Image (cartoon, rainbow, N blue to C red; front, side, top):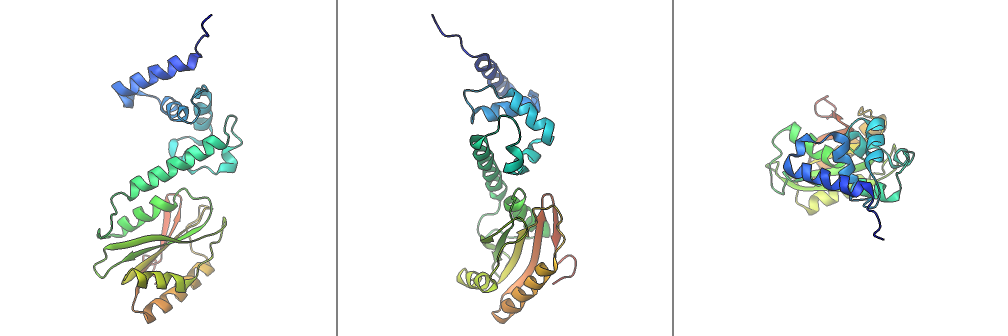
Length: 226
């Protein structure tokens, strides 16, 4: 006797036919259940898709959710956690695609877009440095340190050394505040002053320090902190 095929197999096939015809006609939960189906190919993902959207509201908030919070949703296991991390990285690299080496960072908005591409979804603090030449062309965008929820160890001389290695004439400091408030702490201000002091001695400009907190940001340059 032929084993009956699970009902979701036919349903998933019909969704794929609809997305092939017109992707915009799918509901959010239908698109999400298709995406989740690649991580859980032998499971009906509609209930999970609906549960995630009910809790978080939209795709962006799902991607931004912390793993420990996601794990409280029925049906979420290590496989989905890794799968969502893959998608976060995919979208980070997609947003970074316009910023090839030697492209000109011609406006503060471009700098913020580049910073957010890396740090918007992070649930621990990371410190990155954007390095540019004397024409403000991108020569490097690198992670300098990774820490905890509210602190990342930063060594100013390592930042300056790396800038010199890449022959950068200017740097933009970037880090995130996972808690959601982009306002600089006293430690942030003191660190920026220290890095600027060392950079000036080495002939390197500190152009800005950007703090990312989800979709918000704080610019030291904009608020006159540099």
